Image (cartoon, rainbow over all chains, first blue to last red; front, side):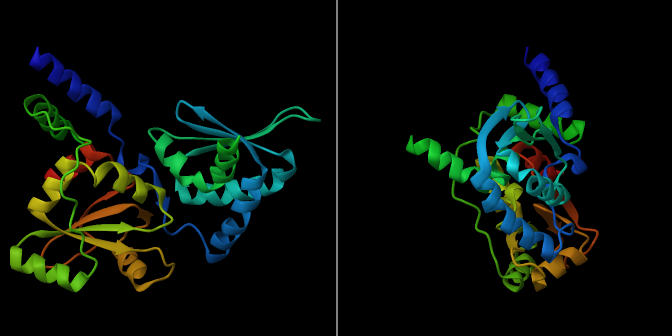
Amino acid sequence: MKMLVSTLLVLLCSLVAAAPDERAHCNLAALTSADRARDRELVPVLAAALLERKELPDGYAYRFDRRVLKLLGEWVEIEAKCCQPLSYELSLEPQPGGALWVRITGREAKEFIGLEFAPLTARLAAKEAGR
Amino acid sequence: MNARGCAVLSLLGLLTWSGSGERSASIPWQTDETRARKEAARSGRQILVDAWADWCAGCKLLDRNTWSDRRVQDEVRARFVPLRVDLSDEGSDAELRIRALGVSALPAVLLCPVSGCDAGARRLVGYAGPDEMLAFLRR
């Protein structure tokens, strides 16, 4: 029985262990000073426009006021250079009135995503806690 | 992680039940490179460099899940001189030194021989949980 469990653990281990380039990381060389400064400007603006955060199996979906579409695109471009290897999916549902979403996902990266983008959600979390 | 590392971990997991979330005395991180080198020379232990930054989510996850793991703590305390290098300030000397070692992403953990760290130092780049870190440290 121990042998069987051990074999299964070995198989599971080899399946789930991330290759070096697949581990969630922050690229040290990707952002310029201007990128970092712009990111610091954008986060509070986007945090104020964040309406909802939904949990996904491998990440999170964030719904924004659609008036920040351009800024969101700019922010995603900066983040995607730094936080890798994640997927960023921006979607605008049918207009007028459709919601603006960005879905950020990655293999074994959910906790990383939750922590990395916590500054974006702090205001929403505080608002929800106050209800 | 290679299959052999996984097999060793799996066997250890079967033979010894060590709660991975349990905490023991934390890792005695040094922040002074010169002192760490002296200690490494005195003890003959390798230097374990943890390159981190306050803006790095993966570094915070390492603290939360990996460096807090009792098995990892015991391994580090027994075999390495642990040194933390703070890269929070963009363009700092520390960042330049770490980048000169070929590190371009955080978190990064490097194992440096007593003789000094170079671009050939073994490394683990990106967030790794306790099992993967243990396999790396024991390899």
